[in-house]
Length: 65
Image (cartoon, rainbow, N blue to C red; front, top):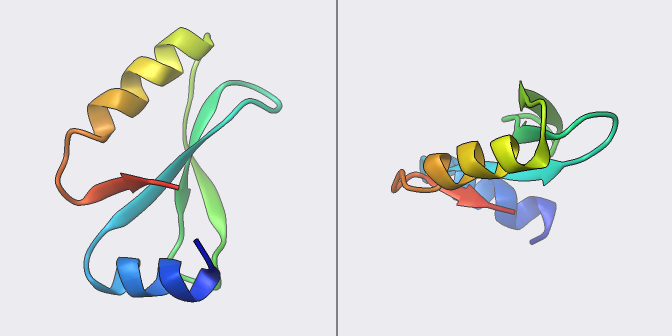
């Protein structure tokens, strides 16, 4: 997905999230400015992160990058 695509999706009211492993298992959320990303949450294990990620994706307005 290009930056332009992400901006269109966010303008339509969606939130974009992604998984990250460095330096800790965490979930990142796309900010509203220029395709930046910020940390949404940090988790002790990848399993805990994946469970939280799956729960977030149950929302109709949250999508994965």
